[in-house]
Image 1 (cartoon, rainbow, N blue to C red):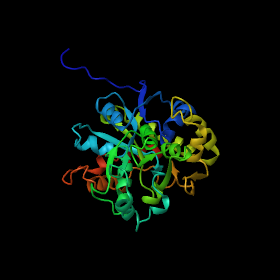
Image 2: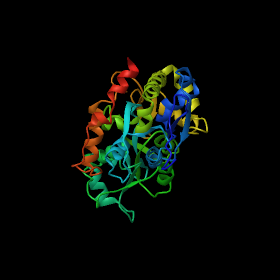
Image 3: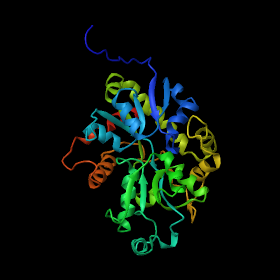
Image 4: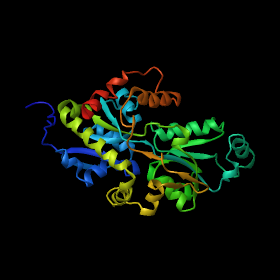
Length: 342
């Protein structure tokens, strides 16, 4: 035999499914812990990943068959603008919302108004560095939402603000140490800073961009092509899990599952702040009714509109070149979603 031997998939294989330990990995871990995958005849091995770069790299290298992912990774890989090019599919959206912008208590909440915050930073900033905020990845909704919030406050130039990128688990500790002044991240990392009295919530993602897509199921091209039926079954199982995650009666059990060391390993009181009826934002309390949306009308379908939201904002942020293009329906696979729901 000559050349590189490629792996041949079969329906007996275990699906290697990656996730990042955040609250919105819930559909994957709930499907595993409650037996939903097994009920649908799937053998799934969950793989805890360090962050979104790890998810991207391991999908590209063929070390994962599918993963929970920020929606921008689908475009990064499909368009190859990060130097890694591989065809991937998004057969479903896993959730909407779930993010927030948290600022240090070094910044007075009363000063953060649209008409005043830029003036406040210009005249009263005493640190020997610019106002510095972090997002999780250049291709993430966190980056998009953070840029929207900064633009709202007319903070658009390097002289106004320094935007950096950090993995989610480093956000709260970096804020507490004074290395950054704020961040946009998914839960539970906003609640960590808030309940430690180190930060306060300046905005939730639902307030910034109502019903924006958050995490997607990303499937590698080879697995999808050789295992179309398994891909559809995986979507069907995760849709059932999303429904369970959305059920208020299940929230207590959901918190117990997410608190397990192999998942987020986060204290239950922190998860309760994120997934309970009310979100304590430090300076205000917010109804958590739409803080996390895992299921509901038009939530999980991978529509062209959802794809366009991500792609257009990444182009505006100059993360993806304006000239890049590919048929969105080749990435966002509504056909696979409809096959799973029919």
